[in-house]
Length: 337
Length: 235
Image 1: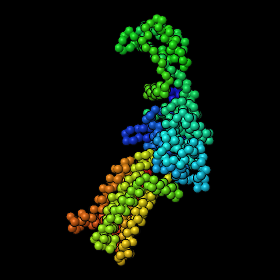
Image 2 (image 1 turned 90 degrees about the vertical axis):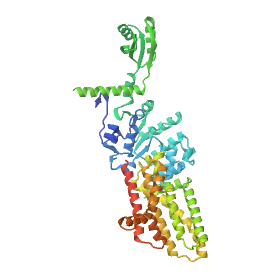
Image 3 (image 1 turned 120 degrees about the vertical axis):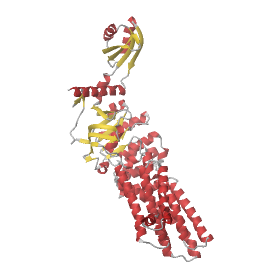
Image 4 (image 1 turned 180 degrees about the vertical axis):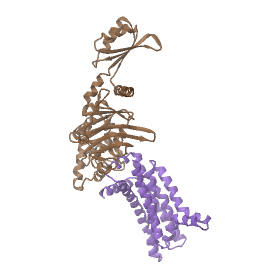
């Protein structure tokens, strides 16, 4: 299925461990998640990307069974989360945005509690705790009270509880938030290893993170799923968002021709500046390689007065804008048809 | 069952790894000890009747401290997100927590048994009346804690939960006094029936009446059912 030239994969529900079908969540008149559909299959890591407030956490909460969808259907391993959430809970490991820790317990007692509730039998309790403690590098703090843990340890303890009880699905809401670079690396390894056999959906607003370990990336903004694509597909979009903006005292037509002659400039859009008739603004779409802006500056300063030159980095925001714009175009075309 | 037990154990650990259990039990025992000494040695009463009456009021003021954190703290610290996404039915959460709070009640009650030593040494109290008083006290505590659990389920704020619980429990305690202004009729009966203290007086006097037992158990059952229902509904 293609939306505005972007691919949206739809997997058959049979292979999907997590499946969302036209899911919406409203709080009163406020719609937080709107008509979101996607699937995550076994052995797949899907990154959930979006700025703060995009609806990532609410979507995660609906999949985890913490909150119910207002409309649509969420299913995990075939269980309908509206009615069978307790059965499904046995198969889900969930790390909420804020690690859900009991400060009054020590690390071992906390993990023991979660393991027991998840149905880990007494005989397997010690080895199960050992496994997650080793996976999340908590050996040094096993006897420490939770309230004494540093932010990094708290985050890793949250991850450890999610791994308890051999879940088939891992839902991680910003699992690397608050970690130092070494810990981030370790956490990514845990996610990667788990994702080889199971389904993982993890949210973040760090683009680099998803491109490193995800098979696919879902982009959500203002509660709407804008696209699901592979990191490679996303990177292609990234490359197209490299832009150089400049303000020059020059005739618009000449400036356009001059800029198009510069190697690396793909497209130019020139418009007069509102507060200064002599100066025009040029918006150039350029190739990803660095140095294009230097070439532009060299060419322009030979003939005209260059007031300003700025390279817009390919930020997440730019990608969103691109996707949002494409969605708007699609809607416009649909309305016109 | 083991999941409910795990919640219960976690709840108890929460009480004893924080000052709450120690605070509540010691304040209660100090208070009860004072009233006991006053009633027995100053007022010269060799029964537990006066002490039970004071224990009842003390209990209604301390229950909010025990119950306020039960669910409010889970919401405010974010652990509700764990608890409600673990393989736990809402009733298991409510049951585990309620049993944890009841354990504190039992400990408080057990501590007052010390008071019986001088009573039996220096007097001849009626054992059945004392037993009946203790049954009434435990039933009263069960009803109060269930009400406290319900209000704790409704709010993120522990202080708000405690204040509402205290207000409601005191209202239930004193509602019997409204009978003074209503000499006859249905309203008078209703005030009497709803009164935590009037039912308790029967137990203190040695009367274990079905009506009293049923009243406290119904209050507890309704409050626990509402708490469970609320946990389901808030999804």
